Length: 360
Image (tube, rainbow, N blue to C red; front, side, top):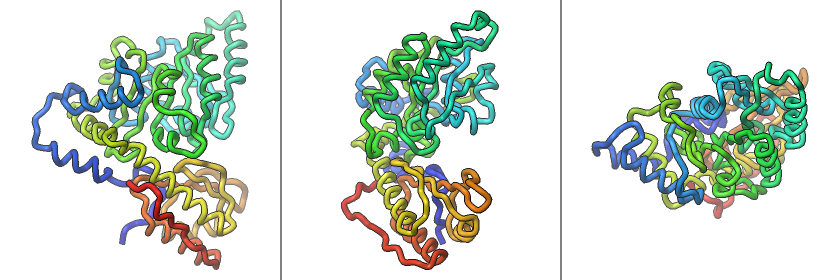
């Protein structure tokens, strides 16, 4: 029996259309280390998608490597990166940034987002301190879209952060491990060309959005000197670069990347309805990550049939749990979740199937 799992958006294999391209090209010979023909095709398609014909694009193996490598390459040896306290680089990357000698300076998290005013106040106070040269000097701001808490930035918020970065000559880096789910979320008012205009670097996540592995790091205004060498030094370089190239070539053909993302969003909204109809508290999120407050007894019983992640205790009797959808989420899995919740809470919840929803 297939496991019913909402534990993450990379707990499956690879999207069928991407897999088909991998199989179709498997017998072809190619160059390596990023010089293969499919990586070149993918770079061209991504440049077209972001509206930057001169952008430098590199394919790295995963998100932690992308974050650590970009931050190390853009900062001077004494530089620090500013992020919110819930940021992935601060909480869930095993000190990868600090391992390269860079301090992560944290600001308050507002449902996962950074406040431009607080960033400005911090930088003003820092450089007003006559002893600032004795400290790790902020040289970059790190944000995620969507955030670790399933929220999204709006254009005005990121524009203000970008303005502060320009004022203090800091680089702005956007972690896009789940970027497709942010761009297709209801209420999102930005797109890839807008991000390319306002960020010094960002990456387009593949691992969590239909690829077997790989992230596309984008420098809209050109890469920092020696970035290729930084990638290899961080262990993030694929010798068989075709693996990433073929996948991103497929993801950026006929709008597949955004179609995959819309499917996951549609499934996430239907998952929300399961919990709402059951009278279970669920936090606001327009993305594929949904955060639910479950009684501990209900949580334990549901875990017998459904996989999901426990996020944080709410109080002695309740736990915040995370449910995540992806390109692979099916009607059957939502039905199993509905049935499991229904049996535990003793109610009937019809599954709200939308036959016109985007599919993968």
